[in-house]
Amino acid sequence: MAATNAGNSLQFNLKTDFYANLNCTGAVIATATYSGSVVTLNFTNTVQNASIKLASGETVTGTVDVGSAVANGQTVTLSGTGVTSRIVDGKIVWRLEFSEGSADAQFEPLSGTGTGALTLRNGELWTLVPAGTGGTSFSVENRLTR
Image (cartoon, rainbow, N blue to C red; front, side, top):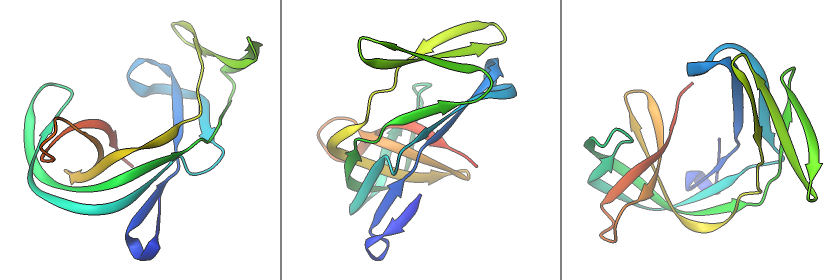
């Protein structure tokens, strides 16, 4: 993540590790990296006491920074000891070899615009998407940890 525009914009770079075993355990068998920043979020406003719905269905309250999001159409590459690829109908299909078996995956370039939001909670950065039309309710899209 990098701040630009006097701190009013954030550019998100994405890297995803795939592990040999369930629950993100074991060796990293593959890493997905994008060709550049995947999304830029341009700050527009802050919502106090926003309603944030978790994947579990629980709802928490927090301060949310909202912005206009632009996905930049970056492509993805996978590398690692547990990954191979092939071309199917002109598109790359990645095969991931896990300890419990294999899975095929395709990654389409992310592109488009919309509204995105961020909040910090318990040392995690959450990416959020609007829920409803009132501008004060959000759902968790990702929980980013370090």
